[in-house]
Every structure is written in structure tokens, then in C-alpha cells.
Length: 353
Ligand code: KG4
Ligand code: ZN
Image (cartoon, rainbow, N blue to C red; front, side, top):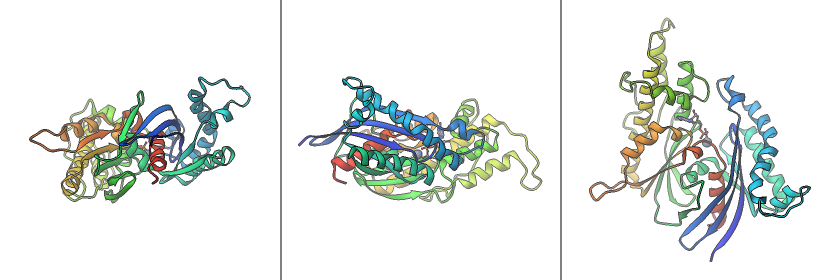
């Protein structure tokens, strides 16, 4: 039996205040979605001068952005309604069936802003509030098409192996069914995005480092510097050795004196080594778990070089080579957003998870 819901999602786990509204429908073999709105208010300008996210400032900025972001998110839903200007937001909120919110992991003060907002709206408008894990949001963003309806099969896509590469995580997650999963490999120290941010700082680039390094790397030679792959040929990730290797190319470890290096070439060599590392560990996990679908998600998957390397390494299956089907989040949804949270939340409800 078809079941329809309209879901509002709120994501505030780090430095983005994000909300989205999606329509979701349960079909016999799939879940069908339509994105009605997707709003992200970034705090990058606030954190840039600190070289990273300053948690106290992040919570305050969420508080300031919450109502304007909510109002902008609600707009498309009220477009064709005859509504009174006085009660328009509450009339639109009454059209929502449920609210999904990121529960963890993330900065506690930032998470609380989103959770409190969801709970207050849920209490006032009598809507169910569903708590979603941030990594589930990244994974489900990979199925999304922003400008058209999209569907997610109920079966036939499992097992899914999802590589979530963000500022806080570098994890390979194995999903046997919707929202049933376990972590099969992860970083033992820095996350890949964190390594991008730290290396950017070492070579004098602003936060967030990923997009800045990507820009410089386009002008550089990726084979100039030979950098180490952490935990070579083991299943887990490690990026702290790579970061230290970059540091010691820029200054002498014993005297602290600056060394001469080419910034573009170093950015390109670093980015290539991160891609090599991610691909090596993913191949190990594919060999072990034989997934039908491979997902690349999280902020680092916004990187064009890494996206291209994955697409070349894991092309569609041919009669000769059997590969999992590769899904990569749309670039706009690689970094934090609420669309993925809405999709995960809707599946929780529609599949009774
Ligand atoms: O997923 P995300 O928005 O937030 C977390 O959940 O952490 O990821 C943010 C991370 C940052 O470390 C940022 O430097 C990295 O993603 N990032 C990139 C790119 N865009 C964002 N890393 C490499 N290349 C990019 N183009
Ligand atoms: Zn994230």
C-alpha cells in the first residue's frame, strides 16, 4: 500500500544550519522522494579567522540562523496555498507530517540547537520527531537528485559499502538492509577532511582546507612528493603520518627552520595520496564484503579529483570485470545538509526502522 509523508529535516551538527522539506512515498519495491526545499546557512566566515570551528560561536550562530532558515525552508510549501500572512508559518508547519533531526555525532552545543528546535516544533504542532545519525544523512544523500523525483530501491542494492569521508569521520560502513549497518573500517587518528584542514593550515591556506587544497592541486604536479599511505595494506585508515610528512617537508624537524617547497606540487601530491589511501582501503573492504553498491559520501567527496579517481577505479560492471555500482553524493550534498537527514528519517518511518 502506498503511504505518503511530508518531512521537515534539521541538521546542525557542526557549522552549517541546514533544513530541508521532502515528500516521501512508500511503493511496493521502493521509496520515492521529491525535494521541496533545501536551505544551508554556512558559518564558514565566522570560523575562518580561528582556523577551524569554534564550538561556542557555532552554537550561537545556529541560534541566530534557526528562524530565518526555517522561514526560507517553509516558503516553497506555502507557494500555492491561500494563507493569511499572520499565521502563514504555522499553517505551513501544519502540512508537515514529521520532523527529522540530527542526533549525533557532532558538537554537543550545535546538536542541541537543532534537537531543541525540532522538539519544540514537534510539541507545538503535534508532529513526531525522529532522530537521525549524521552519517546516515551523508550516506542517503548519495541517492538524491535535487531537481527531479528520485527513488531508492527497498532491496537489490544490498550489501552497500559506504565510505563516509568528512571532517569528523573516515569510515567504511557495511549496510545489509536500510539503516542496518556496522562500521568495518575507520580512521585510528585524523579524519580525511581533518587532514585536508590541517595540511592547509601548515601550507598557509584558510579553513576549510579541502576546497583550498583542491584549487592549488589543479596547478601542481601530483608526482613531485612521495608521501606515505597510513597503515599500508591494512583495513583501517590513518592520516596523521601523512600530515606529519607534509609538515617536515615544509620545515626542518630538529631546527624548526623553514624549507623551500612548491605549494602547488605539495597540495597535488597530498591530495593524490589521500585518494590512493581511500581507494586502497575501499578495495580491501570490497574484497572482503563483496558489496553490490559502493557509496562515496561526506565533505571530502566534494573533491573533483577524488570523485574522478573513484569513478575510474570502480566503473560500472562489465562482463569481464565485476564491480559494485558506484554512487557519489551530488557535490552540493557532499558537505553537511538536511536533505540526506530527511531521506534517512523518512525511511525510518516508512520502513518502520
Ligand atoms: O561532511 P562535512 O561537511 O562535515 C563533517 O561532517 O565533518 O565535511 C567537512 C570536511 C572539511 O574537513 C572540509 O575541508 C572537507 O570536508 N572538504 C573537502 C572539500 N570540500 C570540503 N575536502 C577535500 N576537497 C574538497 N573539495
Ligand atoms: Zn558531515
